[in-house]
Length: 283
Image 1 (cartoon, helix red, strand yellow):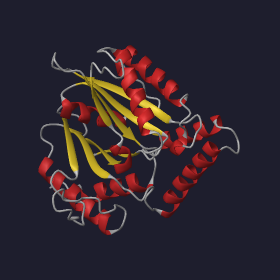
Image 2 (cartoon, one colour):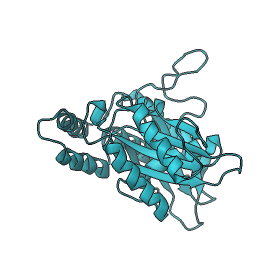
Image 3 (cartoon, rainbow, N blue to C red):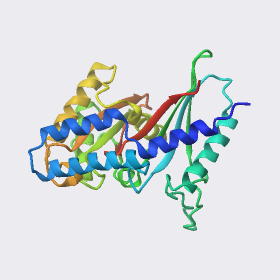
């Protein structure tokens, strides 16, 4: 019987302590765009030093290690129950070691479970693959502060003068960025979904965060939208931590789901600069 536990424990620890190379590279690139000695440059330098120390000392990149998401793509015969049990064991052990903060709280009683296990926590997102495909898992640790500034719109939106088209979508995304200011620990990374129902749109928006920085949509219209929103957001002057500068977002990823004719949702999932996602193939 396959034992996923050691591999998953290692993956969780890596997600907590090591920022993906594409995100680190993006932060360095943006630092070069800020003026020397500016507040924005100072903040980005501090973030990069934080990344270095966390990696060197094997400590969490952020004190809020977030909510835990497993995105699994695997064939039909993949042993889901065994995987889930081993993943939960790995979460408990990472929590015991202090590499995951105790972030699972019962909503009615306020009781903290103490081991990060609870109803639908961690969350598993399953996707079927071809029978001969190699199973792949991505761990995403999603911070609470950035989750708080995520938002969902229903178009048309009269206050924003946003209709049911890509121009309306653009207005929604930029409104979300403006509302967030520095509260989402900017510079942010946005996952966006157009369409779906309320729940499905939120899940798809979060799934978009699994893309690498600079990875554009295969749909040319969405790719253009991503680039336009990124440029306009970085021209708002919000900057790192909301303290001013040219770096408000690191990237924008837009996806879609089909929708009911009566509904047109735009969901913006905001992630802070600390994009803790790590992926491996379960060979």
